[in-house]
Length: 100
Image (cartoon, rainbow, N blue to C red; front, side, top):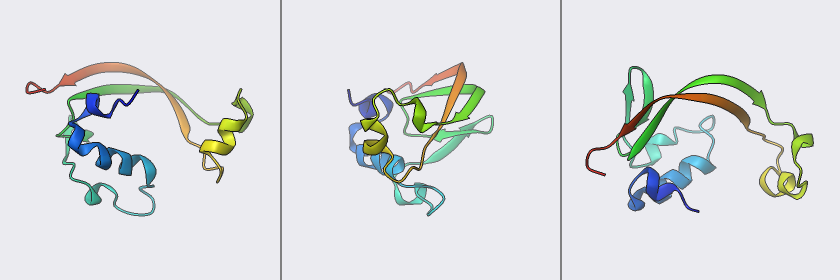
């Protein structure tokens, strides 16, 4: 399922895809999108979001390639071995746009 239309309007799908495919360490990727940064009590999100989950991080752990049950996924999604960090979080607040 493509969740992007649940998160923001479908015309911003390319912007969301761009954010997910480029590292913020290499460039100011937000500046290259049509998204508008804002915040709620210092927690950042985008004004265009239909729904925002404000979460409290509870746990983090770097991904371990040995954890892949289907080993082909490691090569498919992490050919450069640039693994993500996994988080467990508690949802503290849900923000929903009134016009969505």
